[in-house]
Length: 410
Image 1: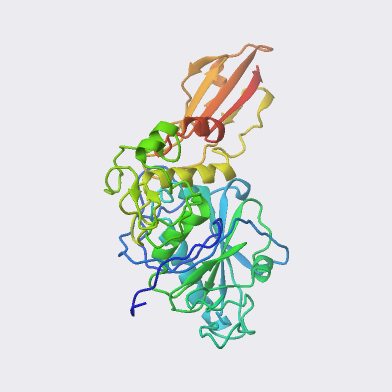
Image 2 (image 1 turned 90 degrees about the vertical axis):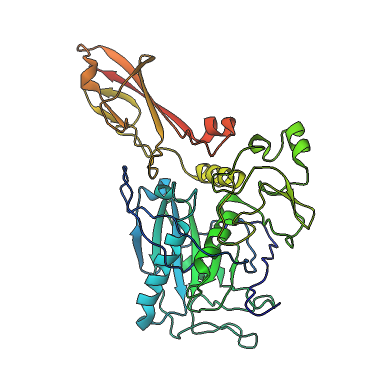
C-alpha cells in the first residue's frame, strides 16, 4: 500500500451502525420553514475509504453518562437520534471532543438526502471523561485501560480498523426514547474507523473524517454496499447487482425504475456499470465508490426508505384522532424538510377537499366549518412525502403516507 493511500474498505458484515467524523463544514441558513439551523452542502476532495466492519443493530442500555441534546428537531420517539460519544478525551479535552463531535454530524448533514431530511434526526452528545489522553494506536499496545470505551486501532490485525467495547459504549449512551445509532469518536488523528454490532467508530481528529461519515452512513442507514473494484463480490445490497440493465428491466429487479434517469449530482445516466469484481453499480462514480462523491439516485431512495421504516411522516396529531367536541384547531404536524421541499398535506371534510387556513397546510380551524350544535363532520388529513427521489410507489403508500381522522361535533 503506497504512503498516503488509506486503502480500500473491506466490508465483512452487513451494515446498520453509524460512523463518526471530523471536518469543517459551513453552516448555511436557508429560506423556508425550519425549526433548526440548516446545514449547507460541502465540497470535500476525493479519497478512498478505510477498512470497516458493520452489522445490523440498535443497542440501548441503562447507566448513561451525562448527555447534552445538541440538536433537537422533534420528539425523540419519532426521530432518529445520533448519539456521539468520545474515548481518550481527558477532562481538560472535553472542549476538543465537543468541537469534533459537532463537526462530525454537520459533515453528514451536508450531503443529500441527509441535508433535506436533517429534520428527521436529533443529535445527542455523551461526555465521557477518560483518565488518559488518546487511545491505543500501535499494534503492540492493544487496548488502553485508561479509556472507558476501550477504543484501539489494529483491531483484528488491521492497522486502520478501530474498535470499541460495544457493551461499555451502549452503557454510557443509555436508553433512547426512539431509534438511535451510537457513534464513538477516538481522540486520535490517525486514519481509520470501524462499524460493530451497536457502535461505529472513527478518529475524531482525522482530516478525512467528514468524508468518511458520508460514505459510512450509506452502509448504516441505506444498507448500501461498496461500489469500488476491490469490494467483495456480494450483490445483496440495493445499489449492487449481478444482472445487467436489460435483465433488471426485464425482471423488474434492483434499480430498474431508475434506468435511463440522469443523476442530479452530475454523475451521468443511471445504468449498470460493471466493476472489476464483476458486480454492477448504478453510476460511474458515487460516494460509495470514492469519498467526496454523492449518493446516486438508487442509493438516495434506499436511504430515504430506511429512514421511513423507522419513523413516521408526522408527529402525534393534536388533538388525538377520534371524536372531538367544540371547534378546535386540528393539527397534523408533518415532519419538516429543508429548503423548498415539504411534505404534502391534504384535508377533507366529509370526503370533500377543503383548503386549510395554515400557510403550511399543517392545521385546520374547525370553527370555519360552521357546524350547528349537535351536527358532526368527519375531517381527515393525509400527509405524504412526494419526493421524486423515491420511485417505489407501493413503499410510498405504505410508509411515506399517513392519514388521520377526527369526528368533530359542534
